[in-house]
Amino acid sequence: MNPQPYNRLYQLTGTRGFANKYPVEGYAVDASQLKATGNQPKVDDLSTHSFMPDEQRKALEEKYESPILKKFGKLAKEVGGHGGMDFVMCARLIYCLQNGLPLDMDVYDLAEWCAIAELSAISLDNDCSPVTFPDFTRGLWNKEKGYRHAYATPEQEAATEATANAYTKAYKEATAKLKLWTLYDNMMNAKTDAAKKKAQVALNKGVAKAVAAAEKAIK
Image (cartoon, rainbow, N blue to C red):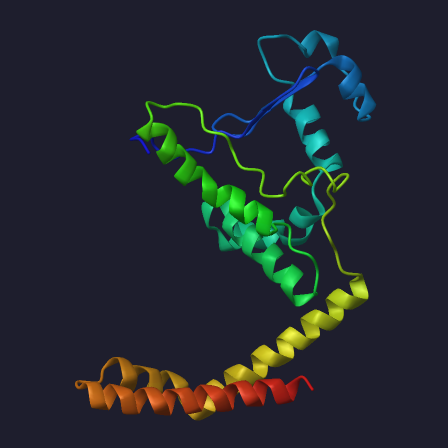
């Protein structure tokens, strides 16, 4: 909407605490809140001009680290992509789908996120007038009392991973045997529409056989 550069200025401000992530990372909480977490406050180090010491910040992060980051964080840092956050989001989505769990984002989140651009445009077209944000839940937005991420049991996770590995292994073997990449290149490099159509048919048949082989491996 404007020339402002992209940023991730994640910031939470409350009456008893403050947290900043980018570009400067730091936390500041009152002594009672810090003590409640199991950390003994160092009064001399607490002021309105600085964040808490790094030692206490790291202790808080370790105490409240999300199970999602514990599961995917290390691999995410190796893979990269916006500091690993892209990988974590994709991995969490795939995890839920593979284990048959409710997604972290539902259709109401989708509607709300997609509405922002359109509502902003309406506001700009009307001299930046306030625009009412629709309640897509029709008054049921607070029906869910508290949010919890869904997780599979260790046994379910192990079974799901074994199935995924078996499927991937079988599909890779079929891809090599059926020379799917060669068929794909033939389709992409076809000189005429007729040749491309013929190559596409051959590729589709090959992919169907590879899928069948992979599905057979997990039955």
